[in-house]
Image (cartoon, rainbow, N blue to C red; front, side):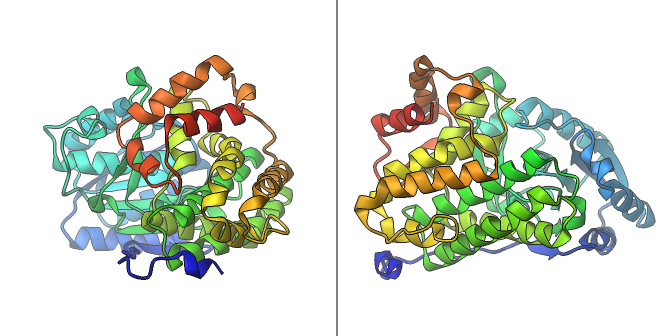
Length: 399
């Protein structure tokens, strides 16, 4: 039983700090949220989002109406791209400061919401820049209130304290983690997610699976993270094929959204390690790479390196999608091939070579994994020693 692998004498911290509104029609709660902001004296907000989904999903109609009804002024920053960078954060912050915004609303997937969180910090530290923030030149202890309206079922950022923003000239993609950027409210409305393209539906859901795999196998895992991990994998395993076949299926979108949310809480508690620490250099070098795709490509090789260290836990959490695992150290390749089979079944068949990486890129990627600010913490959480040789092997196996 995996329970015997948990050190009961080690005190664990259990986190769940954001109020999330989950369900079809949850977007209507923005009216109550805007009314509360107004009562608290918030007169202006910055809305941070991408280039189109905020309108195409219909989310903006509700948000704009709620702001107007509650006499809250706003500026709209709608230039966030996948894998957002520090220049976007600075640009949005400048716009927010110009109108005296004292709260931030992020609408979108991980990229807009993470950008919104970063802007919220800089509103409280107007003498700082996004590069100061992402190179850890100061430690923020406060931020403007954040409201997250989630449009994808993958990142879990609507319910955690993490944000990821790139520094393009250094190819760095660090991870921020501060208590002050927990959204005070989040909206998870599956009706806003039915237009997600098939490939994005797959990639964001695989992101959630990676979150829980890492959180449940990290050095700070707990029974709580293992519980959330297995349920996340079960839900994704069951409902992702349904959503891929029938994108408008609201039940499937609901449970994928719920799975993503609890996966966010899971890694907020258990943290992350190899797949995220090694994916960040991939999309740091090639920003066009979709985060979830990079994670999916790396996951089998990460399982190969970690399975023998925590076989009981990995067998337990992967049981809904990988058959026949007993939790024995000698079944590593069975776990690897089982994960590859499942990834292929949902549409991830690529390797790193398909994304343009070559054998000669491995050392550069390895160095970035160790040089990018914050990734050393992730690597330190792995259940095996994260040496450069291990990291090189993961990248090489993923080519």
